[in-house]
Length: 415
Image: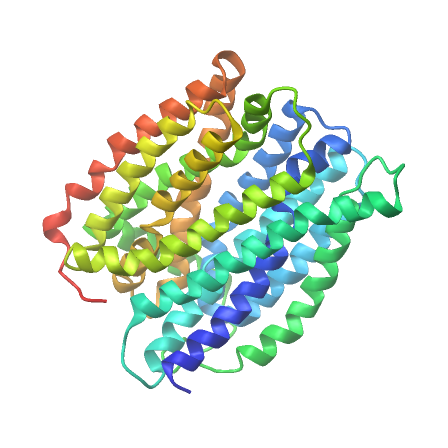
């Protein structure tokens, strides 16, 4: 199988995976509220969700490198089905928190598994090496899947209301669909990804000590590799910015609209457009990298600084159109450097610890998200969402210079 065929297969699998994920994105906070949780309760649940992921991220990355990446991915689907099933029947904060624990665990198990599998399989496949371009194509599949899933997730409650007009929680249909599609994903993934890369580690059962040793080795490698250390530092801020915007965009849009009636479909449309902007950014990143002579750190510097400026603009929104322009512009600029970040992580890490390194990156995002959920949540409570957006935008602008400090250490590439 050549690299193009491999990219197409992996892209289709990722589109389906993230389509399922996208179904709950536009209604998650609304669903929690429909189950009787207030904003403080929701903060607790999200902290459990994110915290579980943070605690399990690195050790489970070592599990993927040790026991096999596809096998670990299938385990993540099982845990996710358990979490969604619990969320479906939950009627109090305790059960919802338990569901969040399983969902966070499923996310941690998944982290870095198939990404590392694809990189290794790609290096073994026949054909010209154009990893950056093919990775951008995969990201388009991912974002199109998320966009379609989010749009579907916005429509499902409306359809549910047609048949159950008296229902207090029209979002249950979203969860039922997620469970059914996740089960189907087992078979689809097995058919699409039935290739083994020559550079993949042997899938042998090893002791927990081996997993821990690999995780510690990965952390040491991260701290002693200048490019990786700078990228991980920037990734923490990335997690903070994502958390601030994702946690606050729905209530902020409600404030911008004032007393106007907001339908579930609007949230789905906004979410879908956001993911489409991600797709455009992924394609544009290849051209931007060429303009910057292949320096992926330069791409990260300019994209994150511009995203910070866009977030400050978003905070000034006075109507829905202005909000949409600011929100979509922010995510286009913000995700413009994601492929470059992925490439730097993969190129600077040997195959035997690649899943672990991607888990370190995901952990950095998670820790940043937890810190922002608490810190900026408190800031928003006392001073308003607008102030949080402005402060987060300034933080992005200032911390973007972390990439400039190491530009001279980044070799020029043409990927």
